[in-house]
Length: 249
Ligand code: CA
Image 1 (cartoon, helix red, strand yellow):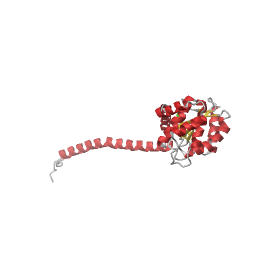
Image 2 (image 1 turned 135 degrees about the vertical axis):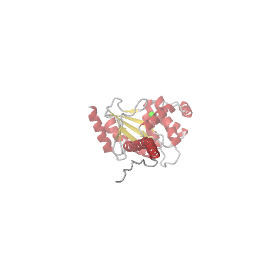
Image 3 (image 1 turned 90 degrees about the vertical axis):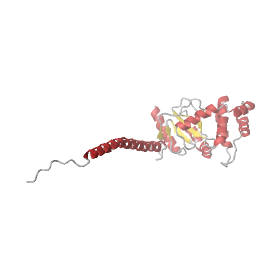
Image 4 (image 1 turned 45 degrees about the horizontal axis):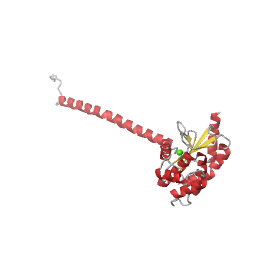
């Protein structure tokens, strides 16, 4: 009868056990890393999805939690109108000139003049120094002679050069436009204000709104808290205004 051999310890079992222990230990070290990596990847996917949503890449209106604050902004029309339309625009931007000429007059006739909509313009500085200078001039006119703001605003777009690259925003031109369109303006003082950039805080307020509402294109148009995917689609503008008027009842 074969002698029952005693259970044999596996050679280096202790070592192996230790190895397993250390493998477990390193697995334990690796596991949180895997979870952290997964969490980071998940977060990145979420950020990309939110970004795409906010950019309205699917051509849908993008809804924000709130409408832009109009504090310190020029407002055209009835200040208590139930619906607010905001244009984020740039005096140097050719599309903004087109929007000013084609869309704003319709908006004015259909809604602003009827007291249903108040309209505000917020400066975007996508074209460098000239954008900034034109914004400073407009904000200075607004600060000194608010009643002449919209005339000056319109004159700035009218003065826009047909060639996008030509430099037309100069202090001389801005003073000349003020002389013609803001009769009460002290031109010496106006020029000094431009030199000293006294309206810079107002321009910076606008820049902060541009950041807050992630404006990437000019013009960008918001109706209350909704950013439209296409500011030139007047039917969509009307539909959104009607929807918001209904909601305000
Ligand atoms: Ca402003």
